[in-house]
Length: 257
Image (cartoon, rainbow, N blue to C red; front, side, top):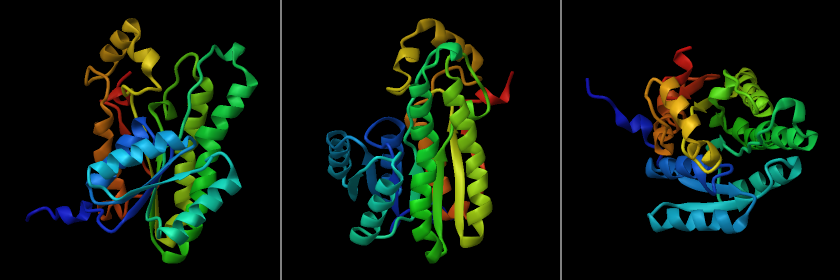
């Protein structure tokens, strides 16, 4: 029996991707667009997200953008309401916005701790709740939370980041328990180590890169395009009975000790 690839077709769907002016967020937005979805990019910097939107439009994809602060509850609610009213229903939400700060835990600044929690964790609540309040009456919707291998593992100097990503993985399960009965599927993607701007210092550190390649069964850094398949799957009808799961895309990193 032939595989019905129409299950993965996102034509007619609309996706909001937070923190998508660059990096993983932009790669996921571009991948969802290639699968047929209309894209609403988000970033806190208009110049960055406008440039990203222009690039997607230049490739022939239907793309708009919404500039709002994902860490501000009312801003997120107002922005989602504007998209729903002026553009149309949001069928897919990708909670991608995130930041990193590195320091030994005993020296970690409380203001950096607060910033990481606001962007990496609280934003997932703010934006998810705003979007879910529109999805629930329609009885359908896909929410994808970007987790991390640090949802499961820890490394020195990034304890607050690991704490937020562990919380996002658990929040993904909790969202499922509340919203699956309303027809929503809420899942997570946990990237391993990918060559992005956020990881620039690590990519350029020969000692770390050597350790990573030895530690990862695939023997290399990930490419952001390699996250697209997971995002398309979890956004599509192919994943209609997949709920509360975290899919690790990590080259096997979490499979070995």
